[in-house]
Image 1 (cartoon, rainbow, N blue to C red):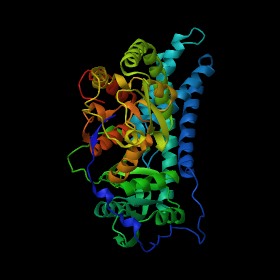
Image 2 (image 1 turned 45 degrees about the horizontal axis):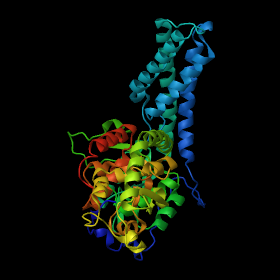
Image 3 (image 1 turned 60 degrees about the vertical axis):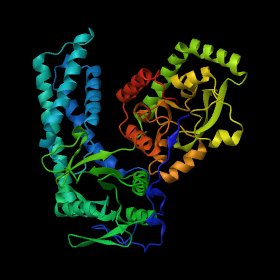
Image 4 (image 1 turned 180 degrees about the vertical axis):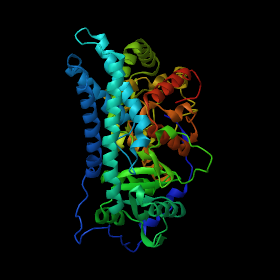
Length: 493
């Protein structure tokens, strides 16, 4: 169990949204009728309707290019492989999730690259299997060129139609961020209707204020109720988040909006001219001249499944390899400390669900109250030398591999804490509860940064959330390797 130093923050002050605030009005959407929608659906029909035509164009272009091949070369397996490669590569390149209506010429380099890679995979498959007829380089080049032309022509027609539609009726959007930055982005977007977005409200200014933007009085939304009403009345499906990092209240609003089917986009209005920002490759384009990128909550889709598969396989292998060490540690503890080798304690895991954490028992608390509320046993005078050795080398954490195998924890993630301290830290430190978006872990980014023992919870919270937001297999592997290298350091656990 790690000991940390709590740091008082301004998060303990009452929030402005908790006070009585006059209800803010909303701007009726252009072309809206007198009736209002009565509910917000889960998921967005806008997303499906905008992605399906592009998907149809790409698949149609691929099929027509495959048809242009000679009869014996049009094998169904090659066509299926081509379609799978085109769809997978275009999804990876975010070619089905544009914010503003792009140009087919802007997408031409990316499309040409995806198509070339797809046909290379088809040519390699045709040459590898004797049942398939090999494709010549000339046939591959001609088919790829034809697909590229057809794809760009189809997308260009769709974008032309979409640009005309957005000029008639831009998509309503909410702007989330500090007052000055949010007004700046809202003004710029209103001055450029070709962006296809029309701000209808600002979230994040002082309660009771109203924003004058380009002749329109944008309402300031300061409560969840006002936010929901604005989404319903304006059919909002786009949210623009303006830096710097949103506060804890705004993060809660973003989750509310995402749950209502809204697409959340980060708009960088703070980058100085002449300088680039890290992660440029993750951008999805620009909006009224501001760099922007899509924000997707962590822990969805392949993230949860792939991480769970890796945890299950790895923890099973580690349990087999560490079996002799586990048995030796248990035998020595039983001989020197008596019965009760395994220590069980309730901790808080993913989504705030409690689970029973397992460790080797290195300390016996006086009672249940001490076990639940004592922060650290570092420096305990009555701890035996072997127990101190287990804590210094973190060998006392090995039984948690069983927690990982069961699915209570992950190998890498935020360290779990007891309910008593979770309640305290969630009130005192903004973003602490956001650590529970992911399964808790045996080790994590905070631990390899030295945030163990008597260190700041605020710092640990920041590193944990940064890890979740940027999760990848490679990052997990690096953390595990750095953890293994630091096991012999006398830092305690």
